[in-house]
Length: 340
Ligand code: NAD
Ligand code: UDP
Image 1 (cartoon, rainbow, N blue to C red):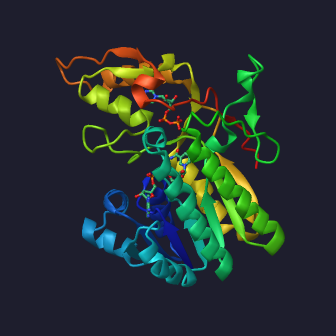
Image 2: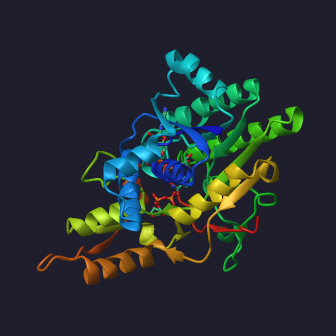
Image 3: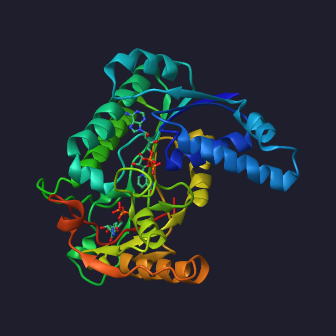
C-alpha cells in the first residue's frame, strides 16, 4: 500500500484531497496539520453521503471504515523543536504532498513575515528533507506566481497563463501582498533546479481559485479575514454590506473543489507522467468580475435562502487600502492555459 504524508491535510484543499484518497482506497495516509476540525467535519459529511447511498447502518460505522487507513498528526512545521519528528515522518512515507501555506490576501498584507515564514521558510525545510531522503514531493504552489496579467499593458487582450511560457509579473516591494507569491515562486525555482541537477522527483500544482464546501470560516464565526466567498456569504447571512474592493472590476475564474480534487488525485497516481511537471489546475469557463459575483450571490440568496422579512445586504464600494490596509495590490485577471 502506497504511503502518503499530507502536510496541511486539515485545510480546505487538503481535507477534500484526503477524503477522496480514503474513499478510493489503496493508500495509507498520514494527515498532518495544526488542527483537524475541517477534516473531521468533511469525514462526517462523507460518511453521511455513504449512508444515504448504500443504506449503511450508522455514521460511526461508515467513518470507522474510512479512517482505518489514516493517522492524524498535530505538528507545526515551523517549529524547530519538531523538526526531528517531521524528518522521521517524511522518512516513513513514499510521497509527500505539501499544502501548508498562509493563504489569504488579508494576512499577506497584515502579517507578511508570518506569510513568508510559513510559505517559504517552513516549506523550504520540507523540501530539504525530501531532497536529502530522496522522497517524491507534490508541492502546492499558486496561480498567484504569475502575478498581474499582461492585459494591464495591452488592453482588451486575453492572456492565458502557461506553465512553460508565461512571464511572472509582480508588483513593487511596498505592495507586500506579493511576498506570498514571490516566496512560492522562489520555492518552485529551487525545486526545479534540484530536479535538473539531482533528478529530484516532484510535481508542482498551481490552483486557480477553488470554491466549495468548507472553503473558509465566516468572519463572524472565527477571527480573521477569509477569501471573498466567505466574506460575501457572511454579509448575506447577517444582512450586512457586501464590500466590493476597488469597484469589483477585477476578474476571477472559479473551479469547484471536487473537480480540482480529481486533478490532484490523478497527479498523485501518475508519478512517471507527472514527474518534473508544473500544472495549472482550474477552468476558464466561469470567469466573472467580483462585482458580478456579488450580485449573482445576492440574487441566489434572495431566491433560495433569505428568511421572510430578512433585509437584503446592500452592495457597497470600498478601497483596497480601507479593506486590507497599506500594501495591498490586486490581480486584474487570471485566465489559464489548462491544456496540460
Ligand atoms: P488552507 O488555509 O485551508 O490550508 C492550509 C493548511 O495549512 C491549514 O489547515 C493550516 O492549519 C495548515 N498550516 C498552516 N501553517 C502550518 C504549520 N506551521 N504547520 C502545519 N500546518 C500548517 O488553504 P487551502 O485553500 O487548502 O490551500 C492549500 C494550498 O493550495 C496552499 O499551499 C495554497 O497556497 C494553495 N492554493 C490554494 C488556492 C485555493 O483556491 N484554495 C489557490 C491558490 C493556491
Ligand atoms: N474582495 C472583495 N470583497 C471582499 C473580499 C475580497 O471585493 O469582501 C476582492 C479582492 O480584492 C480580490 C477578489 O475579491 O480582488 C478575490 O479575493 P480573494 O481574497 O478571494 O482571493 P484572491 O483571488 O485575490 O487570491
